Length: 307
Image (tube, rainbow, N blue to C red; front, side, top):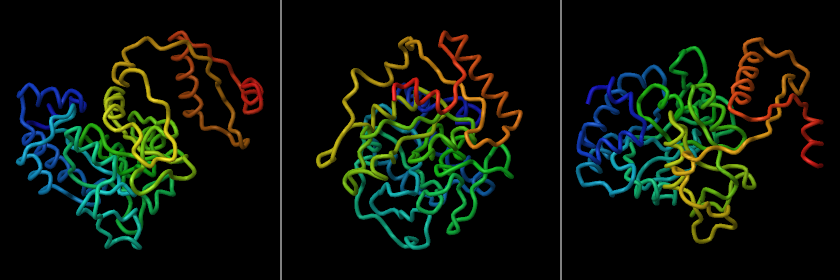
């Protein structure tokens, strides 16, 4: 499979091609590996390769899930896979190897995803950039002098660079949303309790931290939620189960929203003109889609919420 053809497809489309036997999982995997070997030396997004393990998994036969054969990366931050390292971007854990799979990884396997490696994260996922001392800086593929953001910068850089269409990410204070914005991707932080952290934790950061993906398409994010969301035995709490699938939900017309537009920095700093223009353009687009957009400040937002 040629890279120029591979790059056109999101995960849903790739899985469809393989399901119809228009291309094989082996061909897709080798294309992803070739792209990784070509671009990763420049962006440093993948910090641990699992190419041979991936080839063996494909040769042995993959589970017949909705994303069967799609290449995937797990962020190197606490989500474990048997026999693979999990360093959390820290020299403290540079020799740690997992002896079990997290529930999330088990669900990804059932979906048919093929793990090709682990993506870079800052140490313990604490920075809004991805520059762990253990592995060195990760670079934004759109401009190598720029950061892909963090803490899911490795996953975002890999997806933006075309290594794969979707990759695992986590978010406590913006670690999915920041790199998605900086790399031109879609990034959704799921609701508290939507994604299980079993069996190693009940919650992260008091429930503020969660796992999901960065992707090039909204439908990939939705399907990944269908494949991985939901409680596990022992979870301290869980979000209410959704009606129907997330993938089906994106096909429904959205309800009209009331959107607060903030045009001033909350600290009093001067906004860069390009940032201000981007915010105004986004607001204009929302208004043309039928939503109500009102300029507001944190105080007015607080009071309009009824507090």
